[in-house]
Amino acid sequence: MWLIPWRSPLLPPVLQVPELVAGWDLRLALWLLSFASAVVRMEGQVYSPTVNTHYGKLRGVRVPLPSEILGPVDQYLGVPYAAPPVGEKRFMPPEPPPSWSGIRNATHFSPVCPQNIHNAVPEIMLPIWFTSNLDIVATYIQDPNEDCLYLNIYIPTEDDPQSDELVCAPQAPSARFCLELVR
Image 1 (cartoon, rainbow, N blue to C red):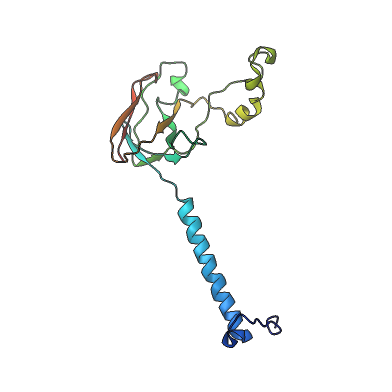
Image 2: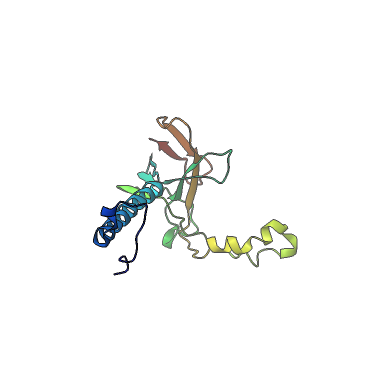
């Protein structure tokens, strides 16, 4: 056994028995592992705010910003503001989106509208900050789809978590799109 030659002057003689030390090491290791997993679980918890809309409930996510001045924001990604413009609705004015039951997960980006950013404007006419970021932008437009009438909504958080507010996007083409913040 690998613990037999090991002796420590700092441990009492009772703990220097190899069988006890091996069991003690195992118990300590299991305790440390359970403590570490509890800490990771607590740090990994994400606040998921839920809001009411005219069409149903949305679940977003609170995201910290890389800034000391700005606080975290609640983000709701892929929120439909119009019915999908496919089939007979293609090239027609947008219609309100269908309602949904339950809570819609709004934590992921939805497809973007089809576009070609590389051949739209010659690179010589674009600012340097834009052309240097084309590869980053291209990652967000990987899966274009004509069903692309979605909003990505970012709401600054307040210190008062009990405040109820109404946040509207009046520029949405189909109708006023409002989120009732119920925290």
